[in-house]
Length: 265
Image (tube, rainbow, N blue to C red):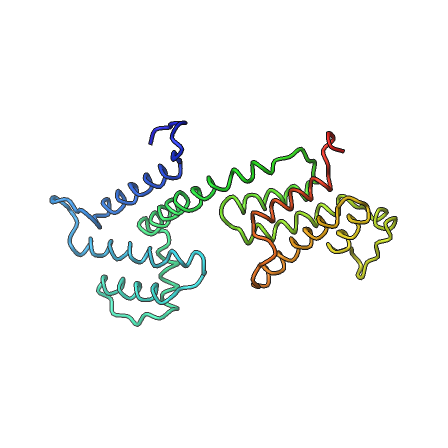
């Protein structure tokens, strides 16, 4: 796919996805799982063994997320031993040991790499291309503390690569870090903000921001929505407060109120 600025459908993810698919075909042909050459030096048994390793690799891939073997892995391990001519009772414990033992075999190792490449191109990168314009629209002249900036960096990365719920959680962390940098203990005392525990929490700082006219009533309510969205997400409750896009928009707006640029101060 040649670069063409006039082609609105031009997408690096599409090109990379196509290339990853070609590599997958090359991988299968190298191990003669598909299109074996007529002058192949491999025996049918060897090709069947390699094909079983590919199937086992595909079954193992979900384990990267669940960190547990499932029925499909156990079944494929059983077929794997059958292909080797080994009669053994395969249970989940045996499947775990086999999964760990064969992880460095080139077929398994490279099959996982290729699957990750295809996911990265077709899912992560294509989604990131669509989400990047929103982040560009939120760019502003703001100066954050190192801690708040680190949280914001994580929030935007999570959103960019498609981890919406995690981005919502991180947005709340961004604001909490920003509050602590914006309001000192002396500020909180001067604003007559009391605390229930040893430390001020987000609710206390939201009250302080309203009392100091840093937040309007609307902005204070928006800050509470970010906090509620984080709590809902962490407790697996339906998040009806804010989606990731709105959470980022609200967070950027509140950061600009907490740390206005010099031109708007």
